[in-house]
Length: 566
Image (cartoon, rainbow, N blue to C red; front, side):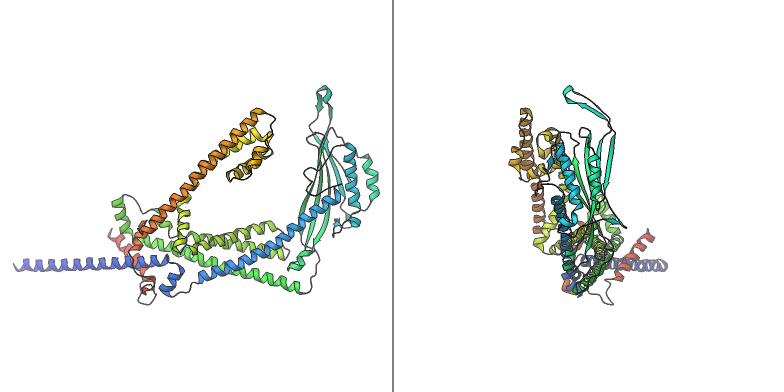
């Protein structure tokens, strides 16, 4: 009897100890879950709420506002500089057209052509004479290119079929498709060479494909001195083409200007302009330092989000198993991707683009590089991403946040809709190009067809598109009407209406979810159980708080204990 009572006493003691251990484990698990819930909620707070929660200054927000201001100033400055370069190129092109093309009028390059053999010789002679008298005719600082002590000559090249006998009256011809090139070079400082060589330069009009006159002129863009930049040295590769490939009796004349920007070999700038150049370089260096700091802070935030997601997975092993057991599925990836903030990725991309563009801009200002186009692409994309990132901070306000949520929710459906509509659009492009191309100038190439149809979708240029259709074939004219009417009706009245419907339906859904206040995901439900306000004081870090390191350590110990028990 005594032994049995002792056994009962030991059994009762073990039961109380087991219940106590289970109670302690349950309390510890609740503490771990609550600690993780607060940490996760703090991660998704906006800068103002984080300031009230911990008293931490929103340095990242302040840095982004400063960065937006200085990057915009940099872009405007570079845009004005690039505008001067473009203006200098365009005005030089107009200068060359008036100097070297006989009887040229503005905006007449598309219709500038010659129709008689004597006119072709006359125009070539005029170009050579104007090139030889450049110093006495131009009002700019144009000079001939010089390699050492020798001037680069003007080159006249004729491309023609090797052999050919053509008799249109008898409907017979014999042609050798091999193309030959015959060239002569003319020294700009020796006009007697042109007078002696050109009369012996015979043009084979029936076999001629083109005549190209090429020469190189040099100039310096001095207007940049007044805008805190060093002048650039330009090489203008001028190509004047007499195009006879169609052999229709009309030889089109075109002047092209390939520009190469180089660093001036010897330069000296004195006065206040030189100091301004160095101040601009210091400003660009400040932008690079600011972007590096912003990139580092955003990368740290992304790393913290990934680390927090991993901790959440450790903490919620039991919840994930329970959720899988009841629902038959894992926690959705949409909840896991919530921890990776896409806005931080966008800011990091903008910082990298701006840093690269600023380095190229410094190289351009110091004349190490002269590629304005590549630099403008980097700076333009970087500034665009920076300003798009402003929407992130506007999303903290409830009325503005609905726009961001609508765009994010509707994006998958919009992409699928665009893919389907794009197939129909491409089919109309191909059909219009092959059928209407010979009768309408807006359907001559696939590029112009796409531009024309896109303008029609937006309600632009409708009447000229209908009117400019040539009525040489009644069948094609009727087809063009059916083609255009069905395209406009299909895309404006149906496809665009369906596109708007997708956006409005998504907007109504998001608006109803916000008004109801019901959590829309498991993560939101998990965070909604935390009722602690940002100014409650529970988020502040102190020595006794488990908020930072102890929370992660408890989660890790809890995971190890579950693994050992299993």
